[in-house]
Image (cartoon, rainbow, N blue to C red; front, side):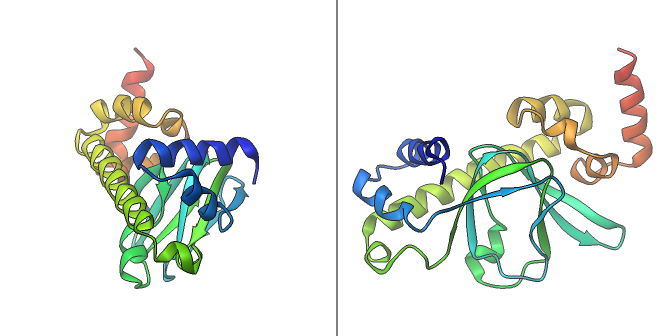
Length: 194
């Protein structure tokens, strides 16, 4: 694992929890660095999400297969915890898949890989709870952006996840902001003229 990404994770864990250096260092042995290219499917639909990923660099989309094709449901940016939320916690197969929308680097740990001593640690529960709260906070903010609609939401999305908007295709915008292709096309044309 590259030192700059390791340090990024350590600083993140210290920011959201009171985890000790000893605990963090004992956790790091199970963390693997992964680099993926744009367009890589990270977790396929129909599988159980057992991995928790700390996104260091890049943008990842959470998609659901629907009759009309893949529908963008959520976005993850740098310092986000990337996982299919429900599958990770329930252990049931997910109807969602994760797709790298740009080249990305993340640090991954699989559920159960923490080591027997750590699993019994109250610090693991504290960190897991802090991560859960962080994820909920980020999801709530992104859902508020989504509900704000296309016109207001794109600007807010640019502030929240810099660079994400430029990676979204027409179909991504329609599914994410729940509007028609003609609405997005008209909005793009109108904002281009400004």
